[in-house]
Length: 424
Image (cartoon, rainbow, N blue to C red; front, side, top):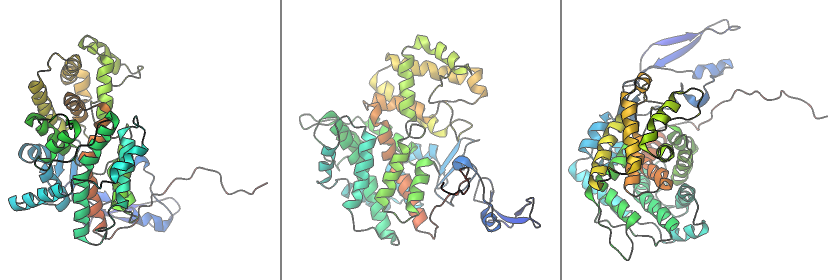
C-alpha cells in the first residue's frame, strides 16, 4: 500500500473525486475506484481487462517479461525441482512443504482418491457419446450431495479437507469419463503409484491386461498438471471466485469453474491447436498455411501461437517444449506426419520475421496438445485434463477468498435498453 492518490475531474461536479492508489508486492499500481459510486458513477471495462476484482497472493504474471510466479517461485524452477503435489501444497498453504509435511500431504491425497460407489451410477444417465466435459460438469457438481460434512466455510480444517478431496478425486472422475466413453469398466485408483502415474493407470489399464506406466510419460503428465495448475484471475478462476462469493458449496464452485473452462476461448486451446495441425496434414503444406496466417484477408489463424497475457515467450512453453522432446524421443515417433508438421511450424514461427516481430511464439498449448496426443489421450479429453490440473488453482483462490472478509460479486452494467415507458 502507498499514500499516493489520484484525483478525477468530471464535468458537472464542483469537486474532484479523490481515489486511493494501492501498490502490490510487484506489478503495476492499482487505482481504487470505489468512491465513484458515491458520486453516481462507476467504471466501464468490458472483459474486466483493466480491473482488479480482488487481492491475491497466489500467482503473479508479468506478460511483458514472460514471468509466471507461484507464491514467488518461478514456474521454470518449480517444474525442474518440484512435482505437482508439492505445487498443490504451495498454492493452497502458501509455502513449500517440509519433507514431513510433503509425505503427510501425499498420504492425505491418497486417502481420498476413491469416489463414492454411488457416483458410478451417475454415468449411466449420460449418453456414451456425451462430451467428457459435459459429464465432468455434472459429476463434480454432484459431489456436493455426497460430502455434507467438512463444509464449514469458516473452518480452515474443513476447507483443507475439501481441497484435498477435490485434488484427489477429480483425476478419478476424469478417468471414469474416459472409460465410460470407451465402454470399458472403471479402474480403481492404485495408491502405490504417484499422482500422475495413478491417473495414467486409471486411464489405460483394463482388468484383462496390466498397464505399465512409462516413467517418461508419468513425468510428462506431471509437468502438464504443474504448468496448468494456476494462471491468476482467468475466466474460470474468476468464475469460481464469483460463485464462491455468495457462500455457495465449494464443489458447486469448482463445477462452475469447469463450465467456464469448457469454452474454446479458454480451456480448448490445445485441442484447437491439434485440430489445426490435422487440418494442415502434411509438412509440405506448412508454408501455405503460414502464408495464409499472414494474410489479413484470410480468416485462417494459427492456433497455439502468441498469448493474450504473455507479450513475450510463454514461460510454460519453454518447459513443455523440453517435455515434448523427451516424450517423442521415448516413442521414436519422429516420422509421424503430425509431429513433422508441428516441428516445421515451430521452426517457421521461431525464425520468420513476421512471427518474431509480432512475438507470436509457440505457447504452452502448442506443445501440450502434441504431448497429450503422443500419450494416447484423445482430443475430447484435453480440456478434462486441464480441469484436473486447474482444480488446485481454483480451490486455492476459493480458499483465499472465503478465509477473509469479502463482498458478494456484483458487477455493474452500462444499460442501453429502452427507457421507462407505459404499456399501451
